Image (cartoon, rainbow, N blue to C red; front, side, top):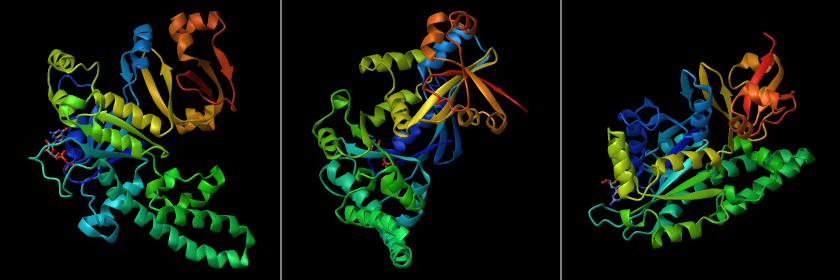
Length: 364
Ligand code: GDP
């Protein structure tokens, strides 16, 4: 499954967030399934109310949401790119994730140490960004040396050289690769570098209780500083989330959230946003045994989507029966959709849409 890694400076609320995600599932009032793979890695359900709506019509034995992996990458500090504080290990962890959840402290609390002095979300963001940019600069320069030599003999390498030079300049200006305007081909030319600053980022503005619905001057400064990046900002209070997650009783949880004017845990939003940031879509299978969500990339064709269930489905793909989620809900069953002409037969070239309810036919 896809991975999102939690990063941030010390004492900003990273562990609080990771614990909120993990205890939410351990508590009886479990909002999600969560299983700990390693102490700092967990698999968590992606909340999707469409699953419940489909299940109300189909009455399956079980409902199976799709999941993403959350990794707590603690310990990133200033100087990490030079190996400070196990820096290389943490940067290596970041290289493996598909998206970054960057927690930024936007709350004041004089009891909680902040090494860098007064609260400053923009500077916090820049400290981490700088470490990642320096590491990327190293990767780009290494490849640049090789490519320069090759470009002398092979004019076809010129284009690649050009891309690398643009990346270098951009990084040297203190900017992240995700904000560099590159075509698909140009991105492919640097794909083998797995650049850290190319990954999409979800910034968590960890604000105080009073600002959890409105944001505050700190979160506003953060929002202003990330425009132009392939990034989103979520405003939430990690402590409150941890408290909600630890409640064993669903009614207590509901009452607590009402007191804070919340309709759902902010974690639901966070997980959904991470999912969208990763450019993912969901399709469903709906049978009496299970109603299930499956994760695919945007633009995937039917056979590739079938392959998520089983590689045999992809290899032996013949056709797919497709009902849109909206039609399924409107007509109430597969049979009713068929009668109304809302069940389509699609072939190998069909691009699966978010919310499609699929049934695959395949050869074994
Ligand atoms: P980490 O070092 O980034 O993992 O930070 P922690 O999650 O361990 O949090 C550091 C301290 O800040 C802990 O004492 C938390 O209880 C506290 N903390 C976390 N989130 C908040 C918050 O939203 N408001 C306040 N006041 N304290 C928080």
